[in-house]
Amino acid sequence: MEITVQWIRTSWTKHSRGGEPAALRNSAPIGFPVSQVPPSFAQVVRMSESDGFEPRAGEKPLRGVALSLRNERGRLRVLPRVDPLFGLPPRPRRPPAVRLLPGQWVRWQLNYRFSSAAGVRDWSYWLDTFNVAYGPVAPDVFLSEPTVLVNECGPVR
Image: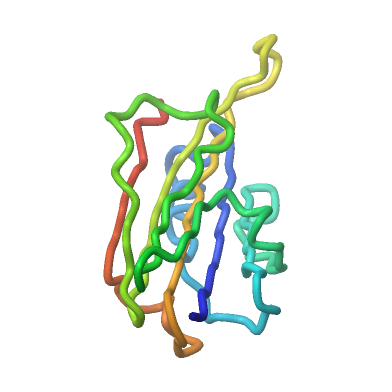
C-alpha cells in the first residue's frame, strides 16, 4: 500500500518569540501540496527564521526520517521518534502510535528547544510536523483537515 510522508521543520530563535516575527513564524504553513518523490522517500520542507520562513523543499529516504512506520494487519502504524531527546521541553507521557486505515492521514507535531552547552548562544527552537497518508492521495491532501491530529508540543519558555 502506498505511503505518503511530508516532514516540515520550522526553526527559529528567541527573536521570533513575540511581536511581528512571531506572527510571521505562526503563519508558516503546516501542510503543502504533495510533490512527486520516489517510493520510499519523504517530501521534506524546511523553513527558518534566517530565511524569513520561506519554504525550502527537498526529499529524503524514509529511513532517514524520524518516523516509525509499520504495516499491521491492514493498518499503518505511525509513531514519530523523538530526535534528539535532550531537546524536548517538559510534557506528559507520549501518546500511543496512530493506526491508519487506507485513505486516512495523520498530522503529528512535536517541538524542541535547545541552548548551547556553554550558554554562549541564545535559545533555538524547532517545530516538526509530520503529515503521513496511507493509500493513494490527491496532491492537495495535506492542505485539508487530517483524519487524526496529534499535538505533542510542550512549553518552550
